[in-house]
Image 1: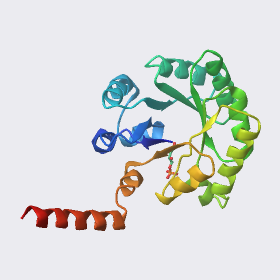
Image 2: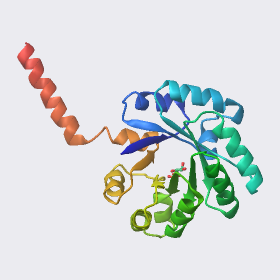
Image 3: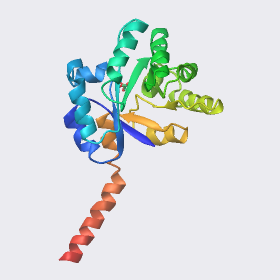
Image 4: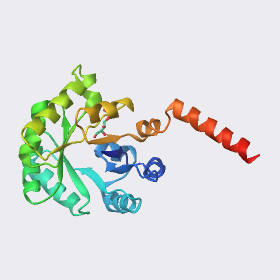
Length: 217
Ligand code: E4P
């Protein structure tokens, strides 16, 4: 199981990375814009992330053509071997991903909504495919059902491409995804924070603290 933090906000990321339960950090241009991390700051952000223990960091390539996606993907991959390059599940994105994968760059096909796109990702040699659970549900599709089908299809053909389920908005979705064969889940800091707030755990912990204090008195 690998949980990731989907953010570039260092203040929000730092305490969560310190827990040691998050494997890495995922970003995309929207996430980077929210945190105001510009392309010229990607290297320093990556240094910070790896210094805080992130084992993988995702940056997304941009540009409307296979050439521009490929060239930006190459630049992003040069930052570190721990960088995974995200590319959209479009024809230009898949063309760029195929070339990058053939050159040994680890890629993630993102903005995935349909099960067949997971097979396109696998065919491109991508290390990961990122379906958007919450956004599938927003569009009236069966998010969990589609992602479970992706997992079954990739498993049936013996693909090494792993599912990184994004747009996860509720802590309880983590266990459902894992049950359905998803090993990698990025969470916003807000959703990640809820995983540490199970009310009965907090109540039990408070009771232990009270008992320990009485024993010490
Ligand atoms: C993924 O790349 C996105 O950052 C994220 O998962 C989208 O989440 P949302 O649909 O809740 O905005």
